Length: 136
Image (cartoon, rainbow, N blue to C red):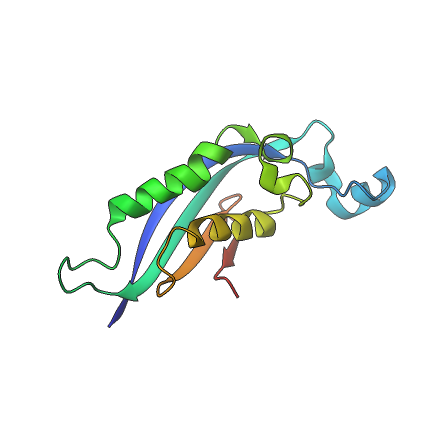
């Protein structure tokens, strides 16, 4: 029997959507106000879900404290109150769109979770705009 366990978290971060290899005109046409040279910020909400078999010894799919600590180590500490473009090496050459942030978070968490378990990341950039990534 496979069960899904979820943990929510949040972080605040600034970013700028742009491509270094594009002109200002092209960046403005594609990214609009999100291309602000002085950056802009979001209060990101994150839901990380882990799906797997229930351990007959503990009754857990994953100890929620372990999942909480992984999210703190891999997401909250490195991303919270940071400029994603400037402060987070994952985005040195990767445009920090919500889609790319979700994939980066998934990859960071994936390396810490048993490969027999499935992971899903849901990242809310605003209450109305969110992305989901399952490693596919």
